[in-house]
Image 1 (cartoon, rainbow, N blue to C red):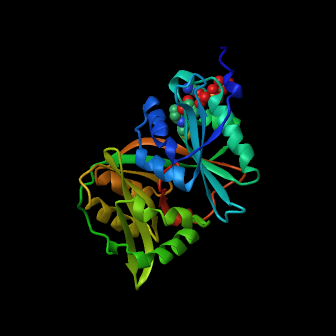
Image 2 (cartoon, rainbow, N blue to C red):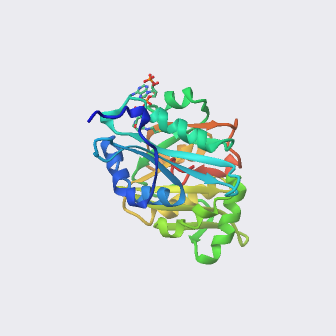
Image 3 (tube, rainbow, N blue to C red):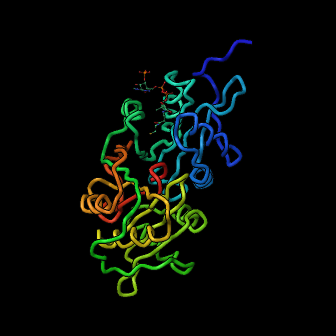
Length: 289
Ligand SMILES: CC(C)(COP(=O)(O)OP(=O)(O)OC[C@H]1O[C@@H](n2cnc3c(N)ncnc32)[C@H](O)[C@@H]1OP(=O)(O)O)[C@@H](O)C(=O)NCCC(=O)NCCS
């Protein structure tokens, strides 16, 4: 039997049943397996994949998470764009991306591009609108403590967190935020005069502890949230900070985190991301915005 051309292989929707195949694909590309993250993305977003015609599992995948009204999303965040190493450079990545772009219609799209993925996204009309710096390392407490009160979030805080998130992200993310209590290890809020001025989550990803989302009124509030989350884990921290937040980046580096990589923030169909970047310090994950 002849092998069908890769360019005609069907693209199918992925479900939570595909979680371990997705993690295998991550591993195949030298990425961490990230089962926990795949689980969130496959339930809050929509996964798409291509199967090996020889029956050897999933050979390409990506996930799209939409925000805003369900019937008319304001933004789709694309992530986990992966093609099995043995099928690299045969057009699968382009095919999957073209499929997602066509499916999105007039919905604007965004993604965080690795240097590997960027040329492809540029060819497909994505423009770089910003950058995020990935930092990682053991957090050393110390230095002047920010005078900001933080505490563990509870169920009653959820409506206020969703309101703040909506204001800062610029679009409704209720379907993602309501999943956070089950997804993250810790969810903390910052308070001033009885109002929530910031919130952040921390979740386990392989051997690291990822801080995100991180939304805060100002840099001091962001520092207080990071310090309080770091106190709850022995693992190295990891987060992806918008490079415009220079003061926070300098501070996390003073506290022991090291730069790992820069990702380009790209958009398709809008010149800039909606919302208020000044209060948006780190995404939940670069794969979901
Ligand atoms: C990035 C990735 C998804 C591309 O998938 P792919 O199926 O190999 O790519 P395609 O064959 O569709 O190539 C599309 C174009 O992307 C560019 N491209 C792909 N791989 C490239 C590489 N290693 N170096 C430079 N350009 C590359 C080329 O311009 C290519 O077009 P061309 O072959 O006509 O020159 C794949 O390399 C991958 O899974 N990489 C590891 C994970 C990753 O970095 N994902 C991106 C996350 S943002």
